[in-house]
Image (cartoon, rainbow, N blue to C red; front, side, top):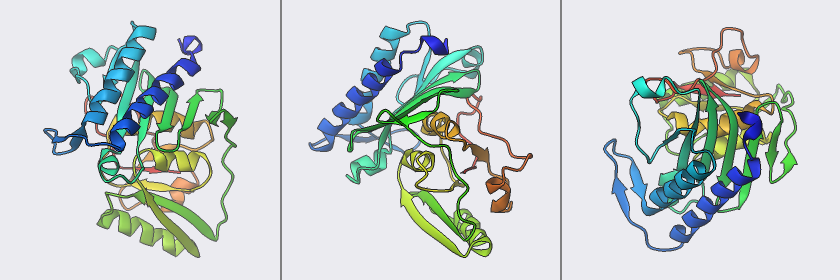
Length: 265
């Protein structure tokens, strides 16, 4: 199945969706509220339609699970071998605030792991993508495998909207292990792409996310030698940096589509 996926066509779909999002970004758009209290805009809906129709046209036999589509019951989903996992506009809050920190995420899941992913950044027209076993790329240029960072300094990126006491405590623990903790924040899957590119070393997410928020960038990250691990309460950050054997990577297509808290490193 993976060998039959035409990377260029999926990139095209993501970039067309990103272009449509930008037409709304510079104009008036409607903001509604979903049942869970999160915002949704005309741009989210339009991007979903472009991606859904594009994927269905190319691969009619592969199911699609999109944040803005119908979420089928687990009794149906658990039988899927392959499926597309899509966030048409990741970072809707940043889109509404016109901060520019939003992405289009398209991942292919095999059983419960991502094996292909595309992340488009509409405002900069940059695209990251990866296929399992083939490396990760940004705009056609292969990303380097991650290098060990300086033990004296660690570059940490956090969520722009989800800073809380648990995250603060984790950062404070990091500060006991490193002479310098360089801290910054971003929205959407940009954070994971920054890790994949080597611009950041670690991303703690001790706050809610959904599977479609991370899947596409997860395989991009993996193809650079990094990963996303379930967060263990009160654990030492060094366990993640050293990739302790007890750590569990995120998995997908769970009955509950929420991700557990995690550390990407």
